[in-house]
Amino acid sequence: MQRRTALALSAAAALFSMLPHMVFAQAAGGDAGQVVNDFTQRGITQVLQANISKQEKSDRFRALFKQFFDIPAIGRFTLGRFWKAAQPDEQNKFLTTFEDVIVYTWTRRFSEYNGQTLKIQSSAPDGDNGALVNSTIVGKDVQPVTVVWRLRKREDGWRVVDVIIEGVSMAVTYRQEYATILNQQGGMPGLLTQLQNQAADLARQAKAG
Image (tube, rainbow, N blue to C red; front, side):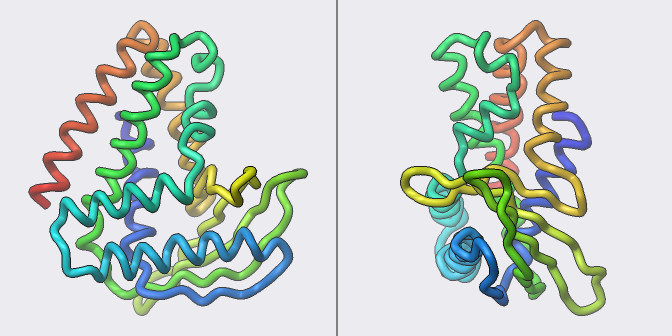
């Protein structure tokens, strides 16, 4: 994993771990804002504040992540043109490992829960079936951090497809870094090997951290 992708992941993980409560302002496209609100509120009560083992926290977060994020859509976007060229088993392995990388990265940061607040300020349409939810992390003795959530409307409701922190898109960062790996490591086999090694390393760190 390249440094920029790691930084984007760490920022997103820190985002989740810094949310003791949210202030939700109903606005245009408010249903999408409510999804963001529900994700973080449930993460706080069911994961961060729960008196359970690290493994159970990781398992609960994985369930929330799969419920509120459109993992297949994010994965297809990050692979770009390489997605269609990949074999079905490679696509499935990528999505599984991609999910592991994100879940274990976020799990490592749960201990950084420290009292900041995420304020949702507005929601706006993003194309015919999308919405952007604008929010800010605020806290004592820290600079405000701007966070934009991109969601898409699916048959069963809104799903998050990107988190943009201080102008840095996680999805775009993944796409750029994975394209580099795919070109340098001989396509999907090389990328899958690198991601599987990274996921295993992150899992060990999450359990020990």
